[in-house]
Image (cartoon, rainbow, N blue to C red; front, side):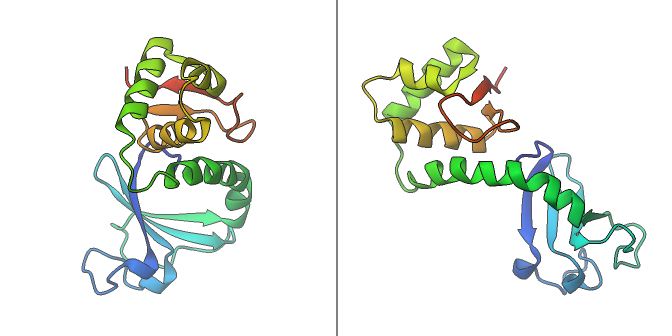
Length: 163
């Protein structure tokens, strides 16, 4: 869900108030409440077999059953995102304003390329911090990373997401 541009936020079922009138009748049947950028809410049931029907009685509720096979097919790319998230998390609590400004200037001028291009444009900055800033920008959807073929490396391709 982290890489789906239509998803604004998601809440694990363990963090939800199951008595919420807007929620499904049995919160324990669902893994997450997903809020989309268009304002819709979708309830996810994870790890179900394809033949399993959603555990909900209200036809107005929007439910998506995510099968075990779907989870397996997404797991490789999801694991690749962990490295991006880790680099960004290493900067938690730090503004890094000057490096962020330098990274933004580099990506705006290049518009697309590979991570190595950004690192090369900033030789006076620590690569790990630059990668953390790149991770932050990717998480905010300002920089679109292509992690479909490989993990977060200097050869990862990117596109500036703000037209």
